[in-house]
Image (cartoon, rainbow, N blue to C red):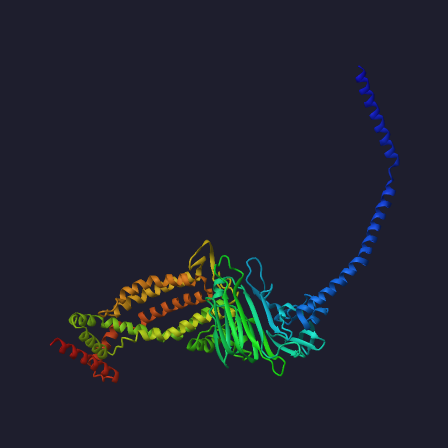
Length: 628
């Protein structure tokens, strides 16, 4: 019982003591006003402590760091450490722009870090933005400086001092990398109103005691070409490096694979994308140029940002101890009319074809299509009108081709008789066949010549449509861009060589060419006799009826819808022309009658025919002598 009492007493005592303590804490607690006053005082004390810290230790640290940085700069940059002490020694951008072009030039490196072609949109899946040829550090310009104190410095890593002025309506930006107040390397940019072309100069002043002027400086220009169009594979096919050398010659690096070259006396270098281009031109040709092109599209599903990596390395020569180069930059559309307006042979950048193909495009197709499209009918209708004109001009050739086939068809029974009569004597059969052709006034090659004559036109058009900047992002019917494919259905997978979409114009063009070949192949089979030892052209043509449309369907699925539209309309018109010729112009009975009349006429052999006949007769005699 005693133990329980003690425990109860202890509990009562603990409760009393706790209550007294709580009462003392409550009565001595600060009021609300006292708490606010205390909080304000603590905040003031913190601010005073912060200010005290900033005014003493931090200032000492900054001074110490600047001094250390200056010493490090001198060790690394030598005389060019002067540039790091200027206010411009920080990352900053100077912008110059006109109505068509916006350029941003960085203090660091002194080169263009953003080149925007104004008013022209690039392809974006979710939005439309202006085309930027340069952005996000995809390009740089660097000069390697060899100093007299055995340093190798790169201008892209150093800071230039910008000065922006005006010369009339021209904006002038000088960027100077300084080794002293009057010692510098200068880049000078001059942008004129409404021009894609700007003046660009490189010069030095007072650096003879700083830079080793006994050898050239290396200028390196590099650009990773951004994708700007809907189909990266199609764009990459026309993205290439083009250059002019040795006073007017031009060449290019392969667009299909990695390529490089070393050339002499280079007057311009162009990093050409499909519809845009960057060009460096110089009034003083570079003695040599090391050029490299690297293909960056290996897998279309993964490599979707860049197409090519271009690098050009050229020497800059000193004259009287100084550099002084007058050059130009061009950042803008790869448009024929714009490039030719500068009269610097820049139209060679356009892939219009060589020789007669390029001539047809430059002097016929571009002016004619330009005139038609200027009427204002829209580019889809302009392509249709253009196609009609081309087919009408080519219709006499189509007529001659069909007429030759008709003549051969009429002669087919007689040729079969000769084949049967001289089946064991190939030489004699050939002689008699040639005599028959000569008497009938038929040239067996007449059907081939028109087809050969159409090849330059076909190839020129194949180069023309992919080069037409005016078709870019112009819509017609279901095609939203005549310079790219006209997808009507997106496949959930990719078919090799075909792609991940279905284009409609190539399907229509394939159907049209199938019916055209069905209509013409029968006549060709009837007209073309099978020669001994030669393949059966009839069987080959039967196979081609099906192979050609499939090839067009696959090949053109990723090509410009404007090109597929042309071939669709062209084949339809050709079918119409052939039907008119067959029904109303060429009559088999009249041809047969004319051939019979020709047979009765004495026809003088040409020198070539006589020579061929004599050679065949000699060969026949030699063969007969051998048998004896």
